[in-house]
Length: 371
Image 1 (cartoon, one colour):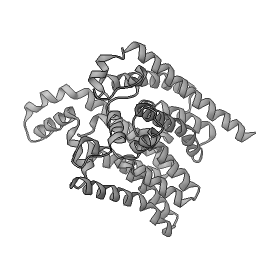
Image 2: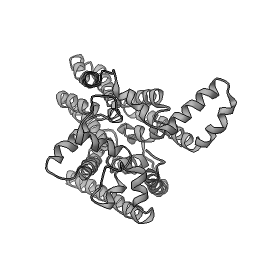
Image 3: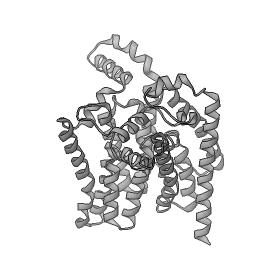
Image 4: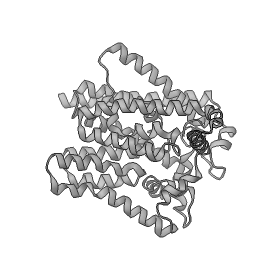
């Protein structure tokens, strides 16, 4: 009976999240005016979507993932080299059925996001009571970046699913499957290689020194992709060099900060134009630091993973990806373990606030504010 009740709760939670997403999508569809203006601004003119509602979930990076699926990577440095191949490869394989690649891209992302919900709750139940695990799962998937980017045509939901699978296999003692899943995580996003950190720390803490080799699979996978990139383009780390094609706003922020640091006070005035972007991003970083502390208390291996990930992403991506900070950090799944509160009033208030923010962030993606 206990397992059946748990299964019913998982289904209910999943239905709540699906219905919420569909309702919000309909609301946005009729309130923001999906049409020629949005197509011209946010979708490559060469990419035609078969249904108007796909413009709600296909924008910005989606174009590059579909482009890779259709044409693979060029032999010269190009914007697509900034994106890792697993998500696009999956689109390419499923696309052999003849289904439009934009539909396939959304279907893969949406499905991965759905499967991640019960999987996250299972991982949470290893550390929390059943009720707390359900609450933290709801809050985690209502967290605006997680809510939005686990259902649009981006690679984030696939990254989340594979990260959860890696840790679930590790917790069950299936080191080979955990290693293979960690390799797939690495081929989804560049910072996926950091999943090796909690694996290695956990093996070391348990004195499972022979298993440490399993945690090396992820870095070796990244090395393989770097070598492939060099073979194809003649450039070391083309995935980093390709960042120069993106984020003119963030580059402007970087230039002004550098000038301000060298004593040019005149750089402060143009920098103030971007204060909302910088303020929101770094406020979210502070929130993640708080959640990192909670994660550390729950499991030091996962806490170390989050802390080092936040540091590394911040150091190497502070300017090139300042607007994407919330998205990057939200898909470090252990932060969700700290998203719980005891009082019902606080929970109800938090849900209302999160739903409002979910709407605003989704609108921000369509308006070009969120990337």
